[in-house]
Length: 97
Image (cartoon, rainbow, N blue to C red):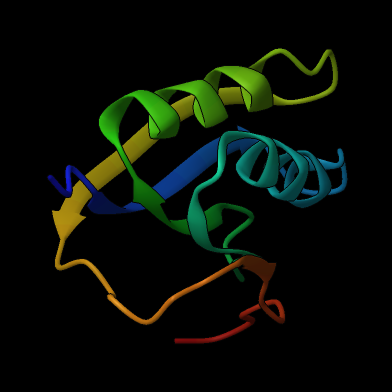
């Protein structure tokens, strides 16, 4: 049974220039999830992450354990699963919408 879900997430706070994307990719690969992460023009970080609820929660916990990252607000929405996705990557920074 496939219990994968996909979420789009936004993280606000002290999240750029502190190793957030590096930490996210390491945590995602350790947890076995797929998706991507990128910096945004407004200083936030966007992520699409796909796996079980438990895997996704484990990734978020690993990211927040960093002494340099300070998340003050999070936005999360469940979106459709991408069946053909096989890895977790860092996308180029997004400096405009």
